[in-house]
Image (spheres, rainbow, N blue to C red):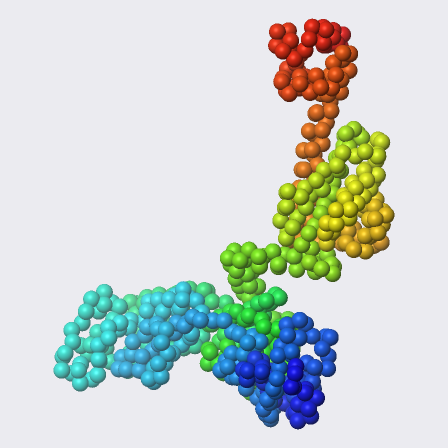
Length: 601
C-alpha cells in the first residue's frame, strides 16, 4: 500500500461508534462498515492480517484512504451503513439482489373506493397493503374479499354530483350481484364504507374482528327471523374461515411481530421475513444476498433487517431472530427476541423451514445453469465432512476380486472433480500373492500403483479410498509408508456393513449422514471399483480357464491355442466343430491329439 500509512490514519480515528469507509487509489468507495468502536474495528484489518481470509486481504491491499462518520449509538451506525451501501453499492460489500417490483393491494382514494392490485406505489392518499411476495396469495386475498363484499370494479368518477345528474347506468356486475349499484345511487357511501372497514381489518390480519362482528349480525338476523340475511352472513363466515385456514395461525396472543431467519453457504445467504398480525402470517419474503467477504450470518442478518423493514414499511416493535445480534443501544421501541420454546419458537421454525427450502431451490437452479458451482460445493462439503486439508479433486479407490483365492485381481477407479475419469481406471493381475490373502493383495496393488506414479512423476491423489475395514486399510498404509508418501495423501477405508469410515490410527469409525452427498460419492467410488474389478476378474477367469484346458493337449502349442480360440470363440464350440473345420487351423496330428484328449475326459 504505497503512500498509505495506516498507523497515522488510526491515530485520527476515535474510540466512538460510527461508520467507516474505505477508498482505493482512484478515489472509489470500495467498502462501508459499522463499528461500536471505530479505531479498534479499523485497526483489526491491519494488525491481525494473518487472521483475515483471502478476500479481506485483497480488500486491505487496495485501501488508500479511510473516511469515518461518528454517530451517537451503534443502531445509528447500523442504519447509516445500510443507507450508504444502498446509495454507493461498494464493490466489497454484500449486495441485496432483488430486482422485482412486488404487488400491492390498494384501496383507492376516491368516492366509493375501488380495490385492486398494482405494482406501482403512488403517494396520492390511497391506502396500500403489502407488498405481497407471492402473487398467488395476493390473488387469493383479493378474490376472497370480492366474494365477501360486493364492490364496484368500474373506473367511473362516482362523485355525488355525477350520481345526482344520472350520468351512469348499472352494468352486468350489478345484475349478477357483484355490485350494489352506487353509480345510480342504489348504495349509500356510508354502507360502502362499512364494507371497506371490514376489508381493511382483513388486510391488516384482524380477521377475528370481522368474524366477531359478523357473528353478532348473524345472531341478530336469526333473532329477527331474517333468514335470507342470516344465510348470507353465514356464507361470509364460512368463507372467512376458509381464508384463515390458508394462513398460518400461530397464537392470538402474538400481534404485530416481524420474524427473520437466515441460511447461507460460502457465496450466498438467504434471509426470510415473516410478518405476523394477530397470530396470522400476512406477509412473507426471502431475499438473496451475494457475499463479498466472509461475512457471518449475524452480520448479514443485521444488514438485511433494516432493508426489509424499510421495504415493507414495517413498524413492528418486536423482532424475532434465531440468535443474538451484536447491536448496542437498541431504541426502547424495538425489542429483539430469541425464542427457545412456545409459539414464537414455532414461528421461527416456520421461517427457518422456508429459508432452507428457498436456499436449496435457488442453489439447485444455479448449479443447473453452472455445473461447476455444484462441483465446488460438493468438494467443499467432502473436505469438511472428511476433515481434509485440501479439496479432494483427485480421488482413487481400490477393490480386490477373487474366488477362493483363484485369479486374484485388483482394480482402481479414479474420480476427478467428483466425477468418474474412466480413462484413468486401472487393473492389476496380482503377482506376489499365493492363496486367498486379501490384505497382501491390497498391499501389492497399492504399492505397484504409486510406485509407478512416482516413477513417472505423475500427481498423487488428494484422497485414497480402500474398500474394506481396518485390515485392508493397514495393508494399504504399509505400502504408502514403504514409498514414503503416507503424509502426502489422506487414506481412508470404508466397511460395507454399516458404511463405516476408518482413518489410520483412529480406533473409532466415522459415520456420515446416510443422505449426505459425501457418502453418496464414496459409495459411487466403491461400487464403481467393485464393478470394474469384477468385470476384469470374470474376463481373466474365463480366458485363463479356456487356455489352461487347451494347453494340456500334447502337441498343441500356445500360438495354435490362440488361433483356435480366435476362430471358434470357445472351448465348447471347438468340441462341436467337424474335422473339416478344425483342419483349417490344425494339422492331422494335432487334430488326432485334440480328439483323443476330449474323448478321454
